[in-house]
Length: 281
Image 1 (cartoon, rainbow, N blue to C red):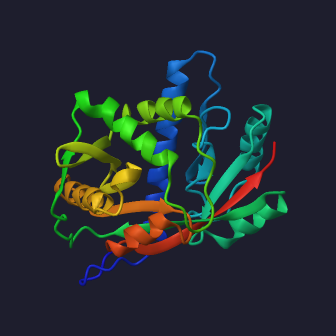
Image 2: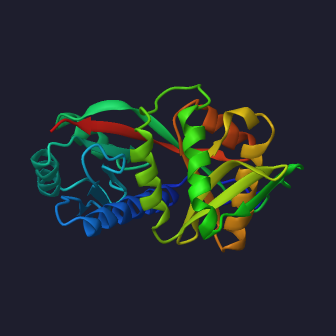
Image 3: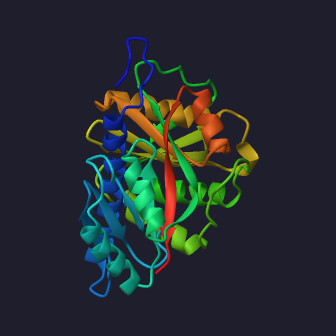
């Protein structure tokens, strides 16, 4: 996976490992949604070595991922998944790695999936991590700090740094807060808080899964940007992932986005992309 110099090589095996970790994350969210409401139609479908996940109307977790690494898709399995999403009135978004079997991309287009762009998967081998910048203190959030952490992250998300292509509209604050609360209740998730002069000004999170550290949800209050907060959060999480036994950190971004620029500056390398293909219900 990593060379002696620490550079990652994006093999199909590595892409399968990372995509399937993302699939387990999405599946855990859907199962939590189903457990929380008897009326929920959330469900997880195994398909082609990956999963298709429905977690509720308009959920960003609704996707098919991790397919195409064990050969072509079984069209009968795909029929069943497509029918289940159509019955729920939901589009089915397939996120197919560029390192997956090329026949999968062709099959989905032939079946009426519309290409909607790409997302990039970047990785860090965790063997070399820069020292955190001075002046910003980062700690793991305690249980009592999670509400304040969520406030800071939601405020930061509401005023994003713009740049690049792609991206989805931000959900209303109440929906975002509920989604964050659900996500942070799942096994493997941890939150980090960043302070300047004792004031909480930023936050980030990561999920630990079978040696993979998935980075997500980092934001800084607008008034405190350009002062190293994101750099401090990123380096702390890299060091924490290494100390927790992970061998790779991974982040998903939209192409040419500010997020991609930030993580590449910190040593993340572009591994592969996922094509986004959507079939209307």
